[in-house]
Image 1 (cartoon, rainbow, N blue to C red):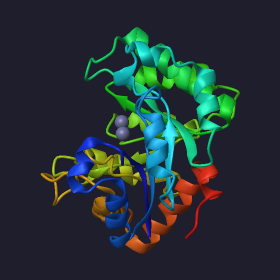
Image 2: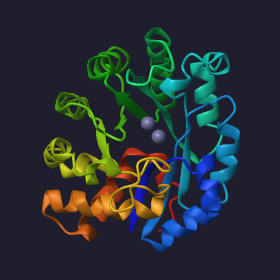
Image 3: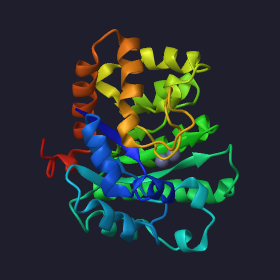
Image 4: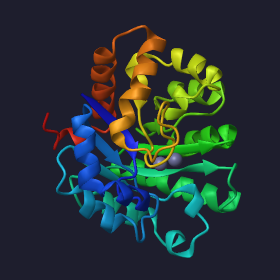
Length: 268
Ligand SMILES: [Zn+2]
Ligand SMILES: [Zn+2]
């Protein structure tokens, strides 16, 4: 049984598939027993997200501010202390994020993204929770800010949907972070990414869908959902020359080690 370490169960596009409960049910029938549904907007998305995951077994959520939302006034007014309070408000909230830097889409200024990233990282440190990091075309600044905020603390987290340069994986691993691979790993053009994945130690790798985005091959044109996670898992198992069952067990253990709070409500 797999755990999808990153999806967006309350995303509008999943309503076309019957909504979160239906999608979680589809996942279970495909061998995906757990899901982490990730927050992008703490101000208005988080309350509904928590309500979505609360009745679903082995489904957890995060609270945080996505880099795309970093210039939004409502999100700017959310403080680090607010994030800590929301994270501590329920056993289902197991991480801070997703946060980070995105220099590919310029939905927010770099200055706002830096402030936002620092705010989320300090919330992770303060709450003692891991941070889900989104990084696109921002390798250098991502690691610089993680080091500046996290050096000498117990900060940990994951580079989610990894598709950056090798140096970011290496430096994140050296800092103690995990690296998570999405459906991008299954795309024909992803040879370089598969080479990077080969060198991520098995005890530090996670798998995810990032649903509803980035459906893996051979479902690329469909709306992504956690039920499609095994396609990515199969590719990663092949890369490492191990069985799917072994990779499912290893990534499940890694996910529950990183998101340790989820373990408290995990019912296999
Ligand atoms: Zn992301
Ligand atoms: Zn995401």
